[in-house]
Structure formats: C-alpha cells, structure tokens
Length: 103
Image (cartoon, rainbow, N blue to C red; front, top):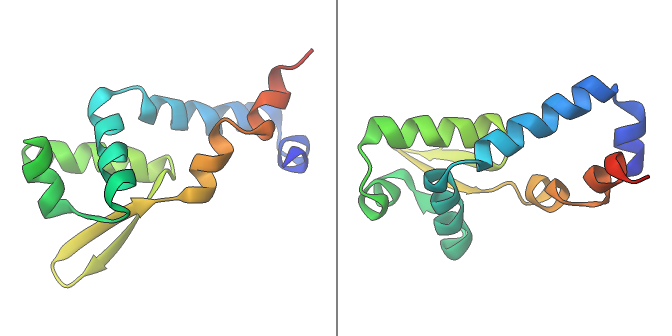
C-alpha cells in the first residue's frame, strides 16, 4: 500500500482522495452506500423507491460515487445494479492515506 503513495505524484494522490471524500460528503450518498452495504447489491429501481429520490437526482449521486470509484455498476437488461468497490472502500482510511499525514 505504501508503494502506491510513494510512486504516485503527491498532487495526483491528493486529487485522488479529494474526489473520494467529496463523494462521501453528502448524506444522500452515504445513505446510498449504506443501502448497498446492507444488501450487497442493489438495483437502481429499488434505490429510487427506498430513498424517495427522483431518478435524475439518484443518477447524479450514483455517478459521483462511480466516478470516485467507490461503487461498481453492472447492467442487466434494462436495470443497473450497484455494489461496493470493496478494495477502494478498504483503502480509503487505510495505511496508504494515513501515512501521508504522519510526522
């Protein structure tokens, strides 16, 4: 894990984490992540009903989470299913990030 930080330019590393933390800095997106965590995989149709969000707003929030690489999407027929990107979630507050700020 430390090797990723060591080989990546510092600015790029900060931008990488900034995108992820911005994606997490919203209670709706945290709720989406909680639903995905609870069920393991969630259909977009179920998320819209559960969160009482219009499809357009839900799509916006899902796109931010996808762009931050915190979730993955699988399309089956006309529906999209979302699950956690476990490796990205596990690294978020890992040794990789912590070592950037240790004295």
